[in-house]
Image 1 (cartoon, rainbow, N blue to C red):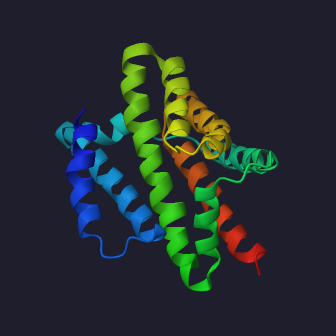
Image 2 (image 1 turned 90 degrees about the vertical axis):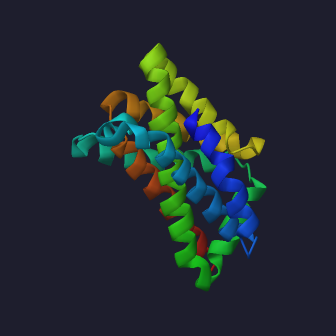
Length: 197
């Protein structure tokens, strides 16, 4: 509830004060607001905040498996032929040489961190505490897909969300899904930038 209350509290002024409302600044603001809302939600937990979000030690194998599995799944899903407009716009921006670094910071840095903290951190932890890991896995994965709003985009990210959620359930840690998500987005931005040349 604290997270949901903090979103508009931080988000409305942030968007209102934003001088440039083009896509990358809006995305950066959106994900930045998400991170601030997560922080506001877990701040009362103090030392227990990081473990509550899933920041627990895990071996290297789930991280490597998760990353390789995510890349393979992402390539397979991209063959479906769906071309979400939002993804196309973000990728087009990242193709501009001056925007590559910004694209990496926003799409491969802020986006995975915010999304993992919200869906596999806060939401997963809350659901798991009430209904167990299986419910947390499926429900947080569906919420992750639905949050991408555009139906074509939601369809494309649902398999990734299921893999990320399964990694969280299997390991009890946020690290495998966070690393896999970051690697996936980073490779997508770099591929978009260099395949267009």
